[in-house]
Image (cartoon, rainbow, N blue to C red; front, side):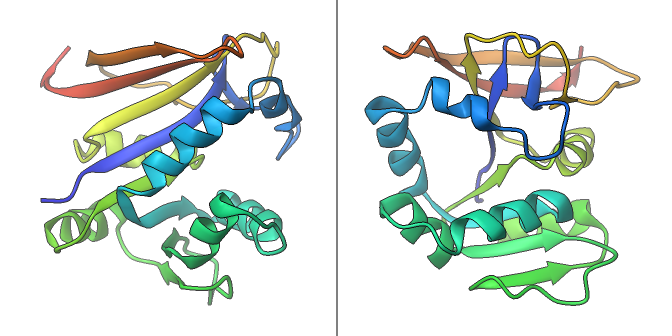
Length: 186
């Protein structure tokens, strides 16, 4: 069965973007050779990306004209955007999934293939976490307090326990944390 892995950079106060949509210029505070290597290694294990509509539109706008090894991966990999409003997806190798996200991802995980990654997409992450479909959460915790923005995790009615798989500090001050969500109630 394929693994579903969530990856995001987050601020110390838990935001994956600042107060304005796509205010992610703070990512530059930790970007460098180590984080690029981690990103490329991670890309090497995956063959599918999942996005919500908002993240898909922002990613498509940025990566279409970007160059380099990460851009090659982003532009070449299969992409599925979960949206009830988009009628089509014009970024290379993209398609729209308008049905139930949990059902679609359950089917996708049973298919042959490599890891499936989710970037950004807080609402989609919440849906998939609630359905128990996420196998791993990877966070690049950035040594910065934004003071406001969009939190990665939505308020929940129940706890979700996590088991730490790895904590890896980078020279930039970023710490990559890898967690496995528990299947048992918290």
